[in-house]
Amino acid sequence: MRLLLAMVFLHARGSSSPYAETCMRGPVPGTAAHRLWNLGESQSLAKQALMHPFVIGIGNGSAPIASFRNYIAQDYFFLGAFIKAYALVLSKVDDNSSKRTLHELIGAVIEELEMHEAYAAGWGVDTSNEAYRTPNAATTKYVDFLLHIARGDSTAVSSSSSTSSATSVAETIAAMVPCMRLYSFLGQTLNLVFKDGKAENAYREWIDTYSQFEEATEKIEDLLNFHMKRETILLREQGGNSLSEEFLQSLETNYVAAMKLEVEFFDAQVPLDVHQEGTSITDAPPTDRDRDISEARERIFNSLQTCTLSDS
Image (cartoon, rainbow, N blue to C red; front, side):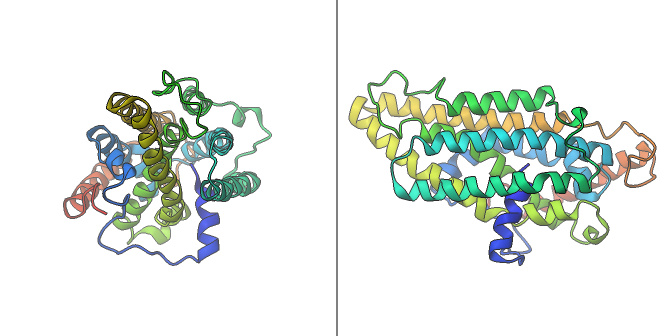
């Protein structure tokens, strides 16, 4: 997800990577974004995503083309929900700085949607084909969750008497940040682990893009940090610590729920062990791909011993 969104930011600042070769960047320490990313459940789900056969298949180039085509098609639907969520957040904020940032993020997604069809066509995905225009159960579930939160159908502060336009902004953004932070983490890790063979990897553009996804990720995390502080202060003024604690729990709930949905999104792609002639980038039988995945997981594990998920 968010492939062309990242490409928009990269085009604006150049293609050189800002990251050290030996470690991965994460949220700014001491912030709400950092705390949510470093929750036990968040870390566990991040590792699940990283070790997922589909993600490893992108990293080492062994993912069947059918899997990647399906993934690109499903991303089309998710982007539509993501831009709606941004628009709903924009309707709630009342400070110019947040409005400016959201306009930048929305503009980037609009550009992404405009470029998406051309990118999809490069992978043989005809977006006019009904088979590619139908969201699967995982995509539908994720979209429904995101828009449910963004519309304010369920918030931790709904019982308060506040009518502030900023009340549910942080809760919504907490449900949106994981897709950005997780992909930045995946891109940085795959770029580090599979750098030597990346030139021959058909999915190297995906890896290059997300290994330099931090600027876009930081923009939405800055919004989360700002509005989390603002809303916490407001709630403490209105109802003491009980409401603010309920609010913080809601942020955690939304963040972890989105992380789970990211893993489910990967689960829903065409299984790597389903070998179809002409759909695999290599001619290796499934048993060889399984061996490659196992070796890749060991390489990733060794890399994470020197640079943990929470290092930043």
